[in-house]
Amino acid sequence: KQEVTQIPAALSVPEGENLVLNCSFTDSAIYNLQWFRQDPGKGLTSLLLIQSSQREQTSGRLNASLDKSSGRSTLYIAASQPGDSATYLCAVRTTNAGKSTFGDGTTLTVKP
Amino acid sequence: GAVVSQHPSWVICKSGTSVKIECRSLDFQATTMFWYRQFPKQSLMLMATSNEGSKATYEQGVEKDKFLINHASLTLSTLTVTSAHPEDSSFYICSRFYTDTQYFGPGTRLTVL
Image 1 (cartoon, each protein chain N blue to C red):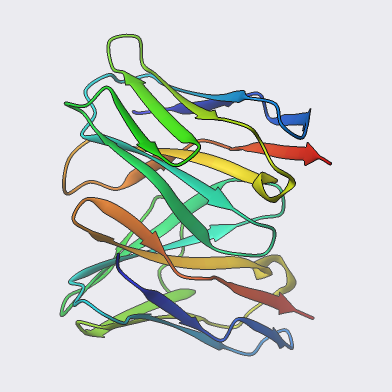
Image 2 (image 1 turned 90 degrees about the vertical axis):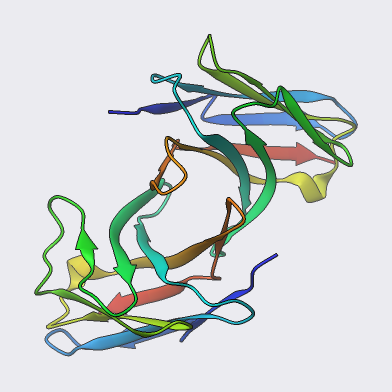
């Protein structure tokens, strides 16, 4: 059974800092991994999707990496802004028809 | 990307009543949709997989008679919480996949008094 862990559970940084969020999974035979952002009381917004054959994906100030052999993914946020404050979740899919397994998320606070 | 809507965005009901939540895939047809619930400061818990034209697949521990799912068309799935009780108060979110990316609706906040 796939298990997904996100560390740390919460993170507070001053504006402008670069930061890394971690996601680890127990079964390395994954189909893809997706990072989401969730604002309080809202649904999830897709940030980046990494297929199992890929090592990283980039979108603006966000960069996600994937190391299947070690069962890890990181989300790098450059030059953080207060608007980046949210909960970030990663989700792992084992097959193309399978359901996603979510981590518990990292709640990020960026202080002005 | 795919656009998923939910209605209502929030609902308050009395204990013992039933509440229906709609999830619509606005721009693409969806043969499969997913229903999650989320408690405060917790992650998402998959409740069931909604299959167009057939029965939903429920996760272990989810009461299928309490959480009725209907997927009558390729753009609409509904979740009905029957005989709701205060412990059913939660945030319910639906989702669907499009080209491997999972898209979520905005969620429905249910409060049972």
